[in-house]
Length: 291
Image (cartoon, rainbow, N blue to C red; front, side, top):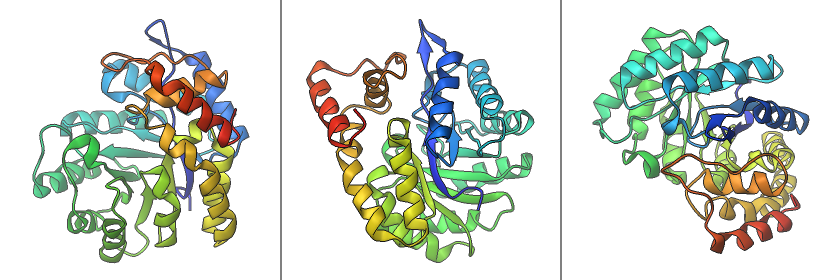
């Protein structure tokens, strides 16, 4: 299955306020060399909220060029405007993306019927495999399993990145949706439990700094080797916590800087990692064998 495995929600590196293409190319090589199964640009971790539409399209096009078909690229193309989501998704298709990741509209808090029609409209407008993304902690709206089940019947909507933090919700989605509907974890610490009940992988923040271990953990779980997967889950566990000491992607960009993989520059309204969290992050990187 093209979309199972460990997919990195890759950061967008900046240098003096601009998209740093050279560092992006280096990060992509680091990911592919360490067995990451796919790259997801312009998600939350990619600071999509503060990219201009031109930058958003450039980051996606550049990622597709740099990956050069070696692994799938799932472009983050969601928006709280249905028209904009369609425009970004059409661009991703033209640029050669393998699929698109679409977050539930944020801020405007659509009802469940609005969520259904939003994703239905994108699916009708663009012939590209679409993965829904539910993360109530970011969007203030929870897409219910019954809505996901309805959406799973639409051609082109192939799966969901589920970040509600509820295993019951994941279970209900799998039980109610079309057979073969893909569920990916949207929550790194829940990846293994989600896979134990039928999930097929993760779109992960942690893989930015620990790509090999995340890919190995997910591959082991896909093969049913839960002993190996569990050992890696506990090895990575300090990172799962530390990478969320402040709002993502503040800590992961600081972590990349600590391991010599680029600058920790984030865009306002995000700010660099507070001093008080730096020792904890460093300890976690050391404990999990990254540093």
